[in-house]
Image (spheres, rainbow, N blue to C red):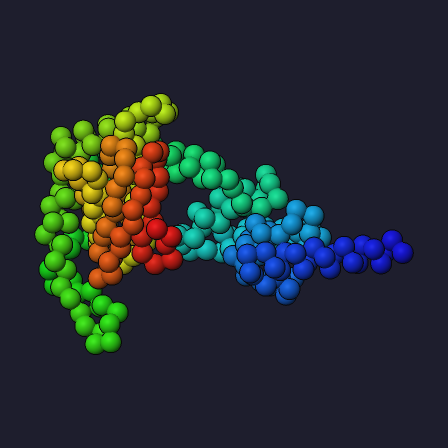
Length: 257
């Protein structure tokens, strides 16, 4: 009777896990995909019996991947971070506050390094007017990069401007005062194109931030209501945002603006 009860409980957990977020995990025990198993561990019920099998399996797979990876493999760092989390907790799922703290610490390290180097550490390919964006239209037409000159101008800040901007960003990262009139915005560009993100507030309040392809940039702006716009590889992006605290905006492929 006890075995029968355990069987039905297991089936229930499997059913609940499979339904969560619309993902089908019915064949997860056969999976050999690190990211699929990792997603299951994030979504599954804490008492799902499959966890005891899949967690050690995916940890072993990650360890093996790191061991056999090429030295330049960009995925190694992600694997190491996921493995470290799995050693301390049931899954790699972290809270919104934890994610913000991680992003904040990475930003602090980045801008401290830039301040010490007295120059930007960003590596990017300058834009040219000949860079063509393929627009997703019936004609599949290509259009030139009209923002190329402006992007290059924004990226080419002199050492004094760069130092002032870096100090301002670091001060904002360390500032935990909720009454502060300013906030830091982190823009991640996941596209293959250099972009300029424009932020238009009330009256004449306007900001613009150049973000290299597959890179990120930060800016400190006054708190308030803003219209964020950008041209991402020929596709128009626009979003109204209320800036009351530090936020991250991701644009481009697989991004969630």
